[in-house]
Image 1 (cartoon, rainbow, N blue to C red):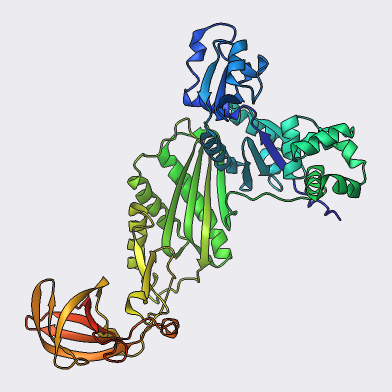
Image 2: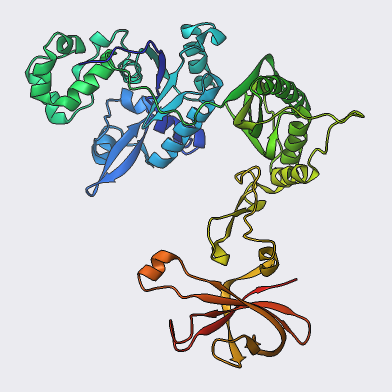
Amino acid sequence: MTELPSGRRYLALHLPWLPAERAIRAGAASREVASGGPSSEAFVLIEKDRGAQRLAALSPAAAAEGLTIGMTLADARARLPALLALPHDPAADAALLDWLAAGADRWTPMVMALPPAGLVLDITGCVHLHGGEAALADDVVRRLARIGLTGLPALGETPQGALALAVHQVDDVGDLPAHAVPAAEAVHIALRRAGLKTLDDLRRRERKALTARFGSEFSARLAEILGEVDSHIVPRAAPPPVSTEQRFAAPLTQAEAALTVIEALAVRAGLELTRRAEGGRRFGVALFRADGHVDRLAVETAAPVRDPKVLIRLLREKIGALADPLDPGFGYDLIRLDVMVTAPLAEVQLELAGGTIAEGEVGALVDRLVARLGRQRVRRLVAADSHIPEQAAFDLASSEAPLAQAWPVSDADQAIWRPLQLLDPPQPIEVVAEVPDGPPRRFKWRRRLHDVTLSEGPERIASEWWRRAEGEGRTRDYYRVEDTDGRRFWLFRHGLYDRETRSPGWYVHGLFA
């Protein structure tokens, strides 16, 4: 049973010369141009296969000379003695394809890279912004050509169908060759022997018979290309909850002018956030240059905000911390502001005398530090559901921590027992006690003796129940002690004397201020 297509439209791009054009862009293929001769522009990219060097990719001129992928380098040079051979770099090709996919979100956020040389854009609902499907496809091809890449476009109702049309450059899926359906080589040989040359030939056959002969996987791939099933694409990133953009007929060449535009976009985004009763916690700015390069900035806030002035201040902090300043180059022709993470934000209560209640200066400071130092360098402690002291809290990036939390305290005196500084791990000490299970009277730590003048405790903390059930884990008896110099320490005896161990160990776990 087939599923009807969803009415979506896809634009696929096939980049047939991606490896060769990447080598030209990187300058690796520039030597052959200066050598002269009728075959001077022909070069190949090679890889080792079972001890032989074979052609993995070709330049257009090499293909025109009759060279084919899979041919040995020796055979290729028998035809073209001056043929230049470069090492094939699939990782660099994949990186370039991913870079192109990242830049393709100027047209739609729904973009997927299909290695080794395919891009698919879900253009449903956005073609009117670009003058129609044909105009959008022309714009994509023109921008690719501007950066030295060849793109063959095609439109379709499914990603697989559109990409197949782009690869084979036909107008109708029925005219596609039968080998356009991904399958093993044995299946393609069987199709040729059966006289099934095009997808129209396959479409006219009973689907159950095809499934019985070639397998259910072949039938599923065929249905996707024919547009009977829409498998959708997996975009590089989910569309943001709120997004605003501004396009320019004449590119902006001044970074300060770009900031003014971003502030205007922040106002528009703030209006949408107000309508949703939300604020933004993570903002992304993409500045698309006319030459295809995209400058991206991201800022985060400790609490949800929608004030454009706050966002611009954080962006200026971010730009000031960049190792390489923003370079408009040939100018920005599109600027987009995305609110990538939102959170509920109620209206601000006004004071009777005017103005707003305290604006959260600590939160503003945290936001500025994050913008300047990076999100992983400003961290916040978050309470954990554990009674083991070293597991009672963990640190997260400030933007990832909960907005508000009540630190769990069992009673009013519990906070007094916990020192501000814990040692990780607890450090062993030598202790003298009046009785084996009594408080310490003297201990040696870091080759220094400390005579205990005051002590409080014990505070008994058991290990996790599952460790006790397995016969592991010991009870801890904590003492808060003070030595003759007034220093205060948090010590514990590890194990109950004569019940869990014959010789309990002692440790210093924390220091009081």
